[in-house]
Length: 334
Ligand code: KG4
Ligand code: ZN
Image (cartoon, rainbow, N blue to C red; front, side):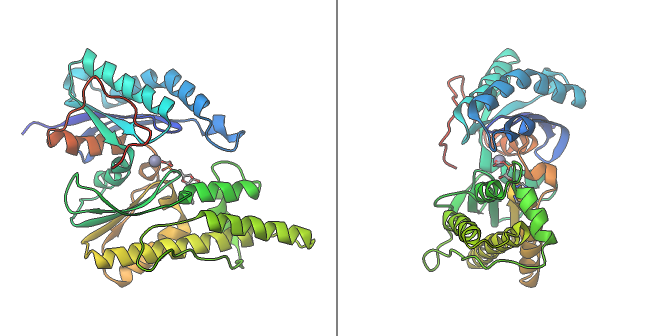
């Protein structure tokens, strides 16, 4: 009945992060070095710049996570690292750091899927009840995942083109908003007194998949046409119209899936789960059907290593181990 302390490491995109989590549920320390400032002027994450920052930061971030926890490596039970998906050069930095750390301190190594991490962020604030439906909605993913128990993931719907956050960022860019654009669209939409009507993309009857590239094009076409007609473009009306479309489709599909699969709990995760419009809409929809619904607090919604440590703890306890042959897996499947 010894306590389990797992060091989590996350470098799949543009945050260099390390964290120590106790028993898969309690954050002991959580360090995130964000690179957003370095990518801002390019309007998106530049892979080569991301890798370089990870290389510069990773050792410091791991040391800081241990220091803040007031722990030494020999007090740890395992090292968990994001194995994929993500940018290959970025993943490799975390994977190699984790391998070196595990080897040097003779600790078990666990490779974690980034999305499993986003889902397990919830366990740091809330007990998970199964069967469960997870909506993972971020810059890289838009997925509906059914879980009948710990460590078991069934993808029942996913995006066929852009991820929701990607669509947010692209629309924001056309509106000349800074990267990452999601929070700016959210803010504009919130302040708007009117919304342009954009299409809702439902795909085939009964499908839980998503498609956002058509919506993004509809926004671009609208702006193009308005410009040609010499009309005033009101960014807040566009932001509100775009957001309404995303929110309605995501809420409707998540609710339908939760009912069809008779889940006991619905959780949301990923950067876009921080969206105020989406949060309000999901909360209202699940409340009406009396289905328990949770979203982790903002720092746990966006990329962090505590979520990787939390997911890694479950895998560690199931006896799953990585080897010194572990590599970054950009296209890793859940
Ligand atoms: O989970 P995350 O930090 O990284 C990925 O794994 O992708 O998500 C980042 C994404 C970005 O696309 C960002 O624009 C979006 O989340 N985002 C938002 C909001 N806050 C962050 N999108 C809409 N509304 C927000 N409030
Ligand atoms: Zn993420």
